[in-house]
Image 1 (cartoon, rainbow, N blue to C red):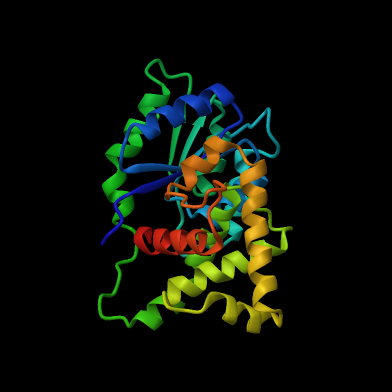
Image 2 (image 1 turned 30 degrees about the horizontal axis):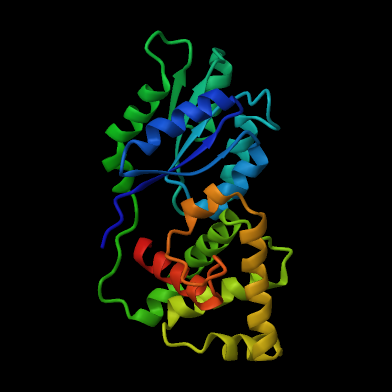
Length: 262
């Protein structure tokens, strides 16, 4: 099934502006907010992990680090096969700055000084050009084999898995993070895979130690992460009396989620 959802990243240091944009984005079913940051370097990392279709970019980032021009230059260095649509919203009125932004790949520039400018105006503009942006996505070849499809999409699957683990507060520093990521990818490839056995062979560990590390990572996230974030990103029913998903519940939930969404 073709995914009609447009993924949006906000790079803006004004907290109130971010809140307003988020509120309007969340009102539209076919728009999805995949990240917010006021830091240009973190913005680049979010581009690599969240794969946004659209970036709402502030130029100056006075309360953050870096700036929009630096971000565009670093974005160009990524040599992405499909660039996000860059919508700049700014208080800056310099024609030289505008020209520099356009030369670096900005698609449209909105001045915040315009009388009709608002967060709603920005989101409505994106919604109006949504079809054109989505039409740039490469078409999926229906006759491609399941194995070839998995290998082709593995970089996308991997970035998506990392993003999901980050969202529920599982740290890459935790040994279970790598195990969980690999376990989810194994199930994406083959839903009948023996997760513990294959990971144990991959990492030359015992089945029990692999399972324990993954469950410990999940338990820690459920103890320390914000409950609203957990409920937002992990929506499956938790059957365990402890109120924490088991390893296999967790792994199969995300494998199914990724296969459904991609």
